[in-house]
Image (cartoon, rainbow, N blue to C red; front, side, top):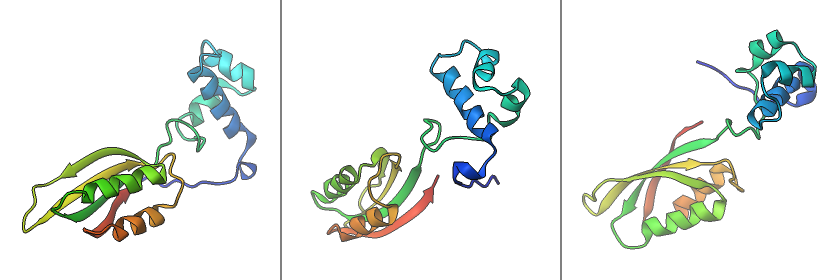
Amino acid sequence: MKQYYIVDQSLLPEMFGKVIAARQLLEEGKAANISEAVKAVGISRGSYYKYKDMVYSTDDSSWNRKAVISLMLNDRPGVLSQLLQEVAASGASILTINQNIPIHQMASVVISLDLTHITITLDELLADFKQVEGASQVRLVSIE
């Protein structure tokens, strides 16, 4: 199992930042190939290849935060809509919603969210979900 850390750039060797910069040059089309990109940032091709799949910037498009939340909803109009309003207000984006048919007036719902642009903490969002009348058993299933 891989384990990741977020650390201040000042603690890392300068080369890691240069690897990220070289990758950005390639992604943005500002460098035609790897040789051109590494020359522009001042590192060797070997260093680039050694670390290219190991270092990322937190604002890198390949770095996404996702969460899966499960909850139970009363089977009445507007409950899911209220949850969706909470998601929209938080800045998160919905990736998927899976809702099972109601049994005994309760429906199981699983929502997956993109948290890249969330403006509150995930704990605050879960607390907001718990405040929605008709929502219960709010549980964070996983986060990436």
